[in-house]
Image 1 (tube, rainbow, N blue to C red):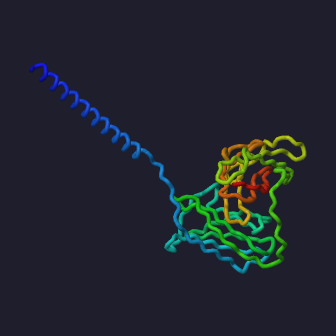
Image 2 (cartoon, rainbow, N blue to C red):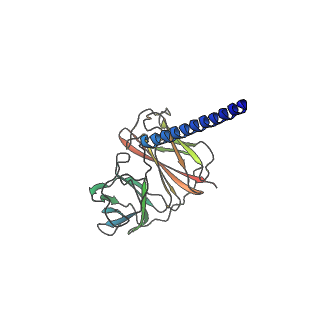
Image 3 (cartoon, rainbow, N blue to C red):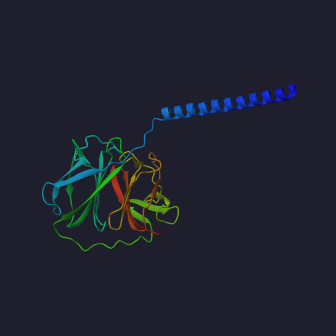
Length: 277
C-alpha cells in the first residue's frame, strides 16, 4: 500500500513539473516574440490611391517648350505635401512617344503643396506617354501615367523590332547587354551591361555616378503601358560592368534604356528585347 502511494505521489509530482516547465517555456516564448515585435522598427510601406492633375501652359506643339504642372493629391482631393527623395530627385518623369522612338528622362521641380513643374519640349507631333515616378512620404513607389497628343509633324511610327545583337555605340562608348537566362515573363532576370571605349576597345573604368548610382534602367513594353525603373545591384560600381535585377511582368516586346554618365556627359543606350511566356 505504501509502495503504491509512493508511485502515485511521484507521478503527480512529475506531471506538475512538466506542466510547470511547459508553462514557463510558453511564457518565455511570448516574451521573446513580444521583444522581437517591439525591437523591429521596420514598417511595411503601403501604396495609397492618388489623384494626378496634368496641366500644360498651352496646347502641346512639336519643337516648342511648354511648361507642365503636375499636382499630386490623395484620394480625397487633398494635396500631398511631402515626398521622399529617390535617387536625388523627388520625381522622375519619363516622356516617350507611343512608338518608343523618342525618349526623355527629366526631373520636375517641387514647388510645395503637391505641385511639380517642368519645361517639356516634344521633338515631334503625335501621341506621347508621360510617366511620373515618385514616392509620397511613408508610402511605396507610385507611378502615374498620362497620354498627351502633340500638334505638329508626325512621322510614320517606327517599327519596334527585337535587336539581333545587343551591342550599341553611343558617344564613343560601346555598350553590350548580356542577359543571364532566357527572357521569360515573371521570371527573375539579371541585365548585365558591359562598357568599352569604342576606339580602343578597352574596358571603361571611369563611369561617373548618375543620380546617385552607376546608372539607371528604364523599361517600357510595346504599347507603353507597363513601366519598370530599375536600379543597379551595386550602386558604387565605377568599372566596366553594371548589373540590374528585374522581372518583366508579361510576354511581349520591350524597349530597355540604360542611362549612364562618363566625362560629365549622360549617355542613353537603347535595346529592344522580346520576352516569352
